[in-house]
Length: 356
Image (cartoon, rainbow, N blue to C red; front, side, top):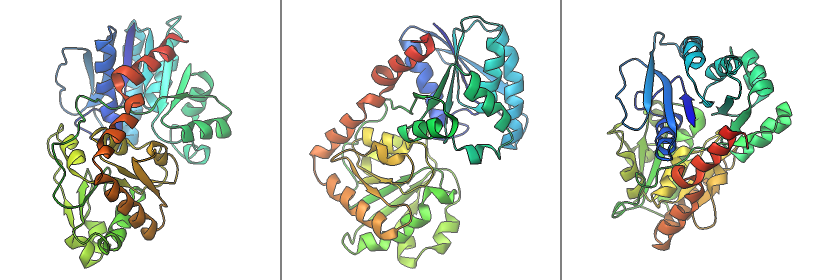
């Protein structure tokens, strides 16, 4: 099968979970015998890949909205001239172009994964709202990252979707030889976004310390943590370390050495950092709001309220206790097997591409 994967942003220029999805999907499909082309955008040239073709559409605009619109327009010609059997898009602008281009290619399957939540009120205020209505109506397969998002799509748009979550490479994300000496919590994500919950985690940290006096917090990810540290207590600041961005392949070691990975967020459609943490054998703390709690199973983590420092602290304490149990590593890792790109998700996505 000739598969095109499209996204306006590329890894490692942009380091988010969605940007990691594209190269991992491409690798998995290529190793399963498909001819894969990645159509993406970046400021700088992208390295060639021996398994699949990478086509860079040079970025022209710093403003994300203008960039995404420009990417969608310039992508169209590539989709018209490319002889693809299936096109899987991770943005609404490129999905709209994919639908239009498919009119010239009888039998081509179009797939869109909404990386966020299909919240009609929020989407109606976006510059691509009209295009999204076309996507809901005309895309062959509308993918969502979680069951929470799938339910929202059905409720808000009357459209049945398909489950297209983020995945994990089990050869890359493996347990570390040992954890940090003392209890260490990890936040991995967009530090600068308030909804991700860094401020709440800092508020909870002294509460955790009442029962775990040696607890530390690592902050890892893009964005400025200083605004949250300025708001935090002196004790929380003293227990927190902001980690450098580091090498693109070094995140697995951080997950593996941490005792728990915490994401007390709101309005998240998934939780890539939580999934990767579990693959590294590290338990998680996930918010009960929206989708992240779907990744918690018995013995792999704890769920917290996204508006209560006490709840976050209690969940962190529970996860720390799980980390002390040697059996937790295997439980966590086993829980991610359905999300393995090679054996779980790639075969499922192939069925969407084939129209089964």
